[in-house]
Image (cartoon, rainbow, N blue to C red):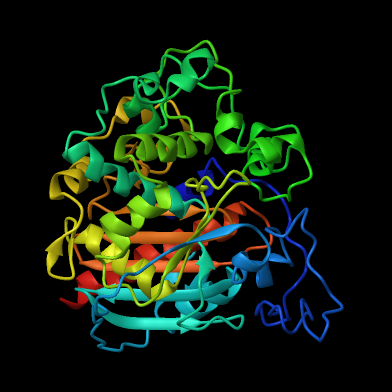
Length: 428
C-alpha cells in the first residue's frame, strides 16, 4: 500500500483536534483531565457531544452509563483460550504517510489509542492499554459494528432465511413508501450500493447522519425523532437519481436497515440472534453490549460495546473462515464472499479507489485486494479491525480520537497496522 494514498480516505474530515495532549505527544487521559472524577464529579461530560474530544476519552469506556444499552450474553460455556507468545513491537519502525519515521509506540500515542492487540496465528503477541482501559473494559466499536452486523447476516443468508436478491420490502413492508429503500435489494443494503440521499459529513449539522444519531438515542430522548426511533427514521430517507447497485455510497443507515432485516428474517430481536448465533458460541470472556434506541431497537451501525480481547476473538474467527472455539460459527462461504465477491466497478467511481484501486466493499467489510489480501473494519474516532490472511495476523485497535474522522490519524493507524502485519511475513 503506497503511503501517499492513505491521505485520500474519503470518509474523513479536515478538522483540527482540540489540544488535549502533553508535549511528548502522549494524550491526556480522562482522569488527568478530571472528566467524571470526584464524588460527585465536577467535570461532567456534555451529552450533545459525548463522542467528541475530550469527553469521549471517558465516554467510550462507559457507554452503558450514558445511553440506553442492551446486554448480549456470552452464555455459560468456557472461555476460548488465547495463547500468548509475547513480542515487544513498540520499537518497530515504519514510514508514516507524511514520510516521518515512526515507531509503533509513537503511532499508538499519537492516535489516542485506548487499547491495541495483535494476534499472529491465533496467539497474542502484543497487547497494550492506555487511558485507564483494562482487559475487562468494554469499549464502543463505532462503525466496526457494521462488520459484525454484516457477518451475522451471513448466517441467515446461508440457511436461506435472508435472500440477498430479494427486495428490502419483501421482509420490511413498512418500507414500501420509503423513497430510499422501496426498490433496493438486500444486496444493495449489504454492500452500501443503495442510491439514497444521505450525507455522512459529521461536521455538517444539517447532514442526515446528524439526524440519524438523534434517532438512535445518542443525543438523549428529548426530540420527536429520538422517541420515534431509528426504524422510523429509515423510512424517511430519500433517493437520488442513480439506480441502486451501481456505486458504493457509505451511509450508516444501511446497516440499521440490515439490522431490521436480520430481526425479520430470524424472527428474533437483534440482540438475541447475535447472542444465539455468535456470541454465546465464541468463547468470549465477557458479555457484549449494544446501544439501543428508545424503542429498544439495536443500533447495528455503530453501537457494539465489547472488550479488546473478545473483539480479537471475533476477528480471529473471521480470519479462520468462520471457525472458532472448535466449531463452525459463521459459514466459511460467507467469509469467502466477503473476501472475493465484491463489486469493484461500484468502488471505482469513489475516492476509495485512490487508496486501493482493486478493492471493494462487501457485506459491510472493506477489502483492499492488496498483495496480502488484507481486509478490515473501521469506525470513526479510530476504531479498527485489520486482518492479513497472508501473515495470519489479526489486529484490533480502540481509540478516542478527538475528531470523529481525523484523516492524518486514521491514515497513520492504517500504515502502522499494515507494517506490523508485513513484519511477521519478513520473520517467517
